[in-house]
Image (cartoon, rainbow, N blue to C red; front, side):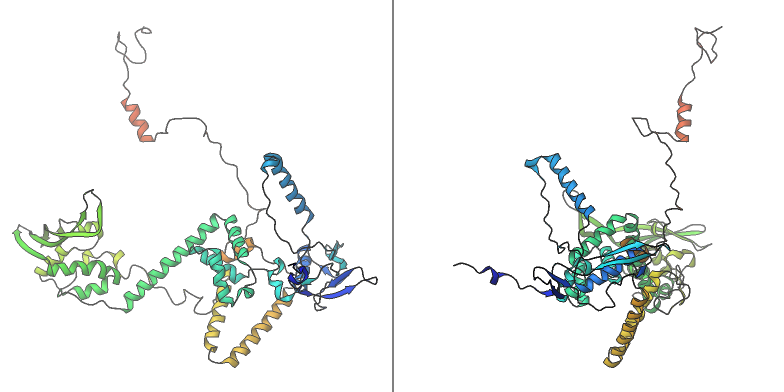
Length: 505
């Protein structure tokens, strides 16, 4: 059965004002947009970029894209011919057939440079030789696809957490409420990731380094909070355990100090004491020494261990109250061992010995930050001058406002109206302003200083001898040792140095 080709075609979703020539041979389409958006003859712009941005916005509203630049066409053609010449006709490299929504119509604007260094629009052709894109399909056009600052920031942050651009894009669709609300395609997220990597190695390192530092600071802040506002449970009868809770951080006390106090009460025993002139030596039997287990091949069994009994000696000097154990736990970690805790128990010491408190394990090691240290979450500060800090503050203010108005739809609608008015004001003040590129975005996101290429002086590298095979350079100590090892030969006739028997006088 023959197929009707006309019925199989997708319906054309045309847009724009259709104009037919008097003879009916030519059809043109004119963008159906507000007159305020259309280019105006003899209007002036400060730069070509400003004029291009204005015309690009007009094309976005009208539903069309421009023609592929001639230079780019010639470049692609030359690369293709070069590849064919290198590989031959039988080994041609296949060129990807990329679809294009550009039809090369003559719609355009023309600019000329004026005497006052402005650009004047002296020509404007608004007729298009093909139908324009329907508003429902415009988000697929390249001119309409753009990742905003929030989206780019989120992509960078997710990249720092090893989340790929495709997964990050899917998260953006959930945040914005749909694919058409993002304003970009998954390929745009991939291209942005590619552009970020193309800059960086320093930027990539700085971004990951900053993320790791922030993670470390967050964990430290959480641990400090637990130390200040929570109290561990007392597990032993040692009188100085409660004092140790207020000396050490919570993690150090629970994971190390208290774990040594428990066996001091339940697993250590004194099996001998030797009294000397000014000291006493205690022999302590530790019945809970854990030893790692190994298999027949000598490899360690992870999580496997067995318990043995080991004798240790603790020396106590009565004159100054010092203690020293043969396990050398304090010397290696800076914290008292279970054997010393057992001797302190025998000696009925009620206070924790201050001489064995090292500041690096105490809760006072890191000073408490003042309430004015962070201005991002607790109000705006006058010292914030970077754009990144200002943007983070704006995010916080908007987010906090929405949280407070969630239960009142009327106030939420009023707040939305205020934000729309601010957006319209911003559009009017930044009209024809060029879109920020990826390079400027990276500087803004990471608060990097602006680079003035004219002021940067690149010094030439010092010449180095890096060719061929040479011996390793010796340091001063090795040179002295080598000279010392060399024996001075004496003359066999007179016994003096500096000459041999042939040249002896």
